[in-house]
Image (spheres, rainbow, N blue to C red):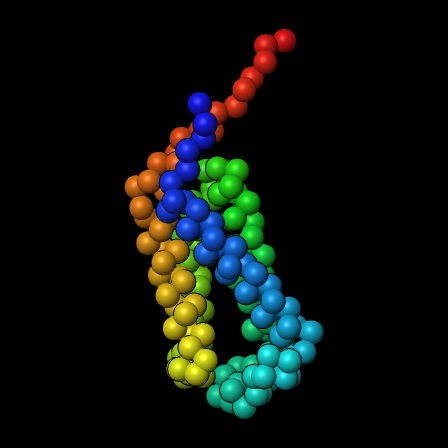
Length: 148
């Protein structure tokens, strides 16, 4: 019997992969160029924040919103029980990240990255709550065992 995964499960995987790639790229760029020049982010954005450059935000972005979503993606694909909670945590972390960013540096509508990633965070949270997604993660995958 084939392992049927609903489209909502694949949507969750897609958004997690997108978030991971974005976090790794953006965070990596900020770690390698703490001035933000590579991403065309002026350090003036950091005025009034506890940061003098983009190193710490880059590390947080790279790990929490880059590496962690990738780990969750793999866990979801392998249908590990902890991965559902991990996906919820990624969505909440992304929503908090965007909220704190807007509180610290203000809302920027051009480019609309805060809006896009805020919506990704909300979409991830909604997808984790869908019954079809929860059901696929609560059931065990079918393994073909051999008797020795």
